[in-house]
Length: 399
Image (cartoon, rainbow, N blue to C red):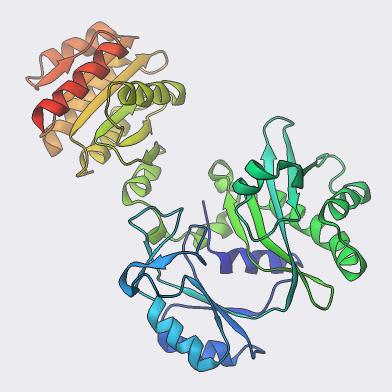
């Protein structure tokens, strides 16, 4: 689960991280009061969407010469004017794609005098099985670009979970970020705070870009991106209120209600598969034969008829889907359950696009018999290669 910058900062502030004063607003009518509540005289008006690159983004409705989604305001009148321009309009960044995202909230923040911009993040390093700090002196930039062009400027520090952030760990980070004076003193407090916030709340990512050294020599969290591990959500009832459903795909929201692993994609062939590896292979072979998958959908190993029905309905609700491929290898999952779920869903929502079904494994004969006797216009496939070719051909012929 992702949250907005202002929520991430409020969370980090509760742990003691140095964060500027700021106010989230949902209407331009709130802008003046929000700005007046801050020290000033410099303000930053920030679009709150779940995507990076906001400062370099462009609003669809405002033309190519308009300012981006993060703006510096020197007066309260500027804050109000920027708020009126930004709220309700669509911000397009590298991470949103061409569709962009509508800005429904802004964060009005007190300005900062910046001497240096640094990069800091925490993530779970699958190679070491530990939480790691990833830091760089190249803050404010896309870390991917830094990794590509100057990888030596990215330093990773793994944290021993039994010891937490030690003085030795802090010393490594301080050295990597070339900190001294007050910033070095602040670092000794900040990095253990970030680690505690990460582990306490089961984050999967905490990115501070930039972490700044101000002209007075102190550190401040200038931006914050936080993602939580959905598998640990049951431990954090208090975090559920931070979820912004308007930032999520409606189909993905519906899938989460049934514990389906679903990710919407840009293609036109819907996929229903059991097992993440098989799902990836299914998407790859669809691309191999010249088409694009419309989704990743893993119904899991022990899906019920109701769960399969829900999955099929989610796929068919996508207007971009022009064909459906069901690819099931029955181990724990039974092929007859899949067949019953598909039939139930088709009877409820209808079937207006080609459907190819490949079943193999547990109760495969029963599953195929159920489909054969259903009267549905189902194209049967013997294996994955056969299934992919058939669904791509069917979609192209129907176009």
